[in-house]
Length: 491
Image 1: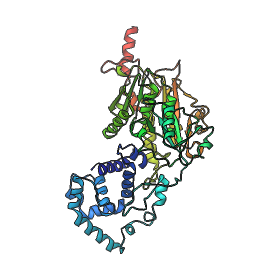
Image 2: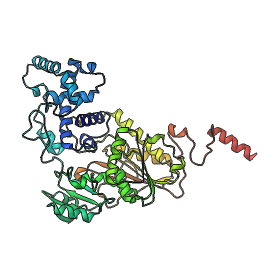
Image 3: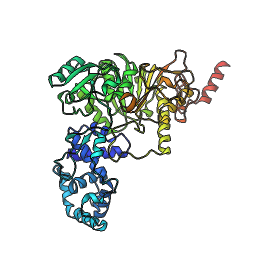
Image 4: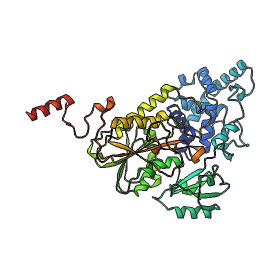
């Protein structure tokens, strides 16, 4: 039952735009990620056929409590996959409708004048899927009958290596290196250049040239069953995704907010940097993502982190609980256009309306984050390639805040800088598969100016509804009433 529920949750996450297929699978908490990836990917490939089968067999009408995503997964595995070898009560439910579903499938084949299941797919979907798995970094097992199972490695189209962050809450870099050496891996020392990372092969690995606790393995290295990973001693995290916590510059004892925290890799990185000393406030609105995050943080040995199922935009910056928050990591929802490990069915184009909506949300949440009165430093990051979500957001918010905050040149030695969208944009950094051998990423570091004001000269409507730090906060206090009050005091 866990496999089908996990697959349905990944499908739902894809529909909500919460991330790419591979990232959602890895962050699902399901122990057998290749099995889960295979099931979700093949369900996506047959999605149009499955929808017609569900309609024709009226399955959702007969089983009103059955979610559409779970229904697709069950019907795929029943008719096209492994034949529901697991599933508990879901297996029993699907098998009750087996005769009706098989009859509907037979009618579809007659209507389309085909004899094979795969012939029901559109031409672009009916091609050999080995290329799709290779782009995702895996290949179908030759012994699989019906659906695919991912047990065989394949050369990846991308050159992005496998990055492994050592979790210093539980171990140290030297001990992890020794562990891998005992497992037959060859340690080649610290990388001297990005180009050197491209030469890795077999069971070789390097220490990253930029981040001190990051090991680099060939792209096809699978460590999901490795003892160090299952025990939380290492975190499988792309190098670019490690930059936000690294560049935030918080020290042990700091109070930090991770504003859009799930699935939690950056939060666990923050905790390691803080050495579990201080306080982390982590927010995410989705209860399932919070539950997954809690599992991840527990496995990583994180303490001193307060999780909250809450939209960060509803958090009150004037709440005394956050009066000592000096650092904020803000990695909001974005288009995900920088993710290079996209699987089949994830290439839907982003409309201009959707892009503007995302950028509008990102501006609001960045503005909101800057309103925390003790804030000294903030990192804004996305896994997007679009200027609208990156440089344009930072530019607009800095203009609204005037001289209160400034851009800091992030990681001066980093080779890939922000696009020249405005003066100073080169202080931001970008990452890309071609130039940095990572996912596509954007990072901007903002610091409060010593002479900076606490609030911008122009705030969005949502922010104007609340008084700014230092203003009257009594019930019903509005700008006009406060002005009248000041005039009476002068009189």
